[in-house]
Length: 98
Image (cartoon, rainbow, N blue to C red; front, side):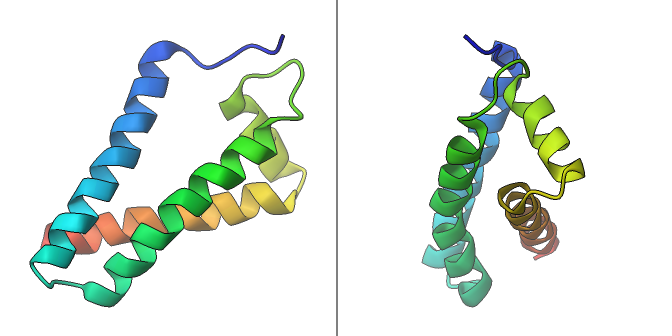
């Protein structure tokens, strides 16, 4: 069985995921940044799916190590995941500024 990331890091990842979802829903209710928030809500399950499906083939690395290795190996799923992550970070930046 392949190693997995530490529990505390997994908790941080899930908090970020659900926190982004809840913040996006709140932004939609307030009708702020509607277009980018809808994109965020739609990309959340895509992001989760890509990362789960991409990490299935790992053998001797945990999820984070495999993702970084896949980025260096120029694998498509890792780069799509990276672009979505950068989008989420920019969305958070915009949301906290408003």
